[in-house]
Length: 325
Image 1 (cartoon, rainbow, N blue to C red):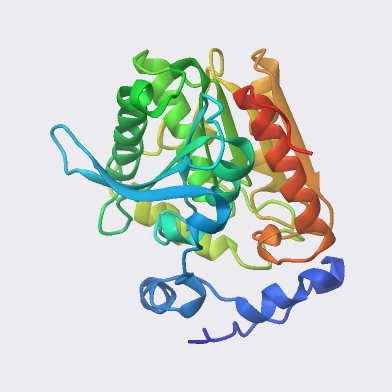
Image 2 (cartoon, one colour):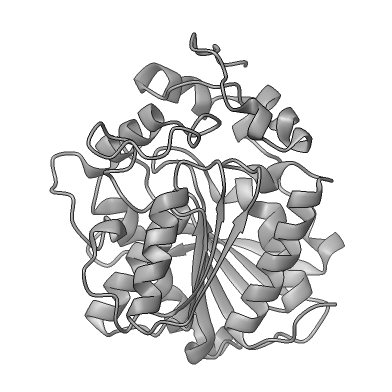
């Protein structure tokens, strides 16, 4: 189902890498609202078929983590079947503006991480806003982290080598999870792996509009505000749910972050990385030129290939496993 185009003309397409133009065909510019959310959730573009785990040398199974006082949390568990496990674990959190997405949409990425790095991956199917605003999504991610720590010995995972990460809202939830885990002191996280994370509810507001060349494609200012309103509900905007409002960055895990020159989140990502550095947190930030939100999803492009290498190598270093050739 094709979403309706926005009426305002594209003004920054000339700044976008031509190899990424097919992404604009798949996701023409639009502003998310209640009506568009229903269309998006039922769009073929959002319903990606999972890959073949046996072909990748991986076993994949659905698990349900005990939610304690809340509902159980569904997740996909990936384990290397054709090679010795590396002893590391990775909690993955999918993107979708806090209102969209499933673990299945990230299946190819998680199969590759598991197969090439020998890492046990758990991808959480957290509850979505607006039906489930905070604290539900972060609670579900915390339940996933607790499950991974509890099952670590049986999975052959070293509890000191568990990392977390995600893309867009998944990256925002990973950053929030790192803050919550630090403050609670229950579960160690050795690395956070953030791809253009959605961190700050103020981005794109009239008070903080940002650079006019960002946010034209895929994820706009209006969509961003819809996502944050849906996620926050009636709750105040504060950490850990809103990492961009955090004041104390000490004690957070070593961080790898990717952003893009035309992504709405570019400036908040750079600011967050700088604050991590100022707090003494080991931090690597990469910005991809002429790229927009979702740029790595266009297969066969130079940018997607570069991101794939950077992301996989950085995750290997962060989890203490051999860097793939």
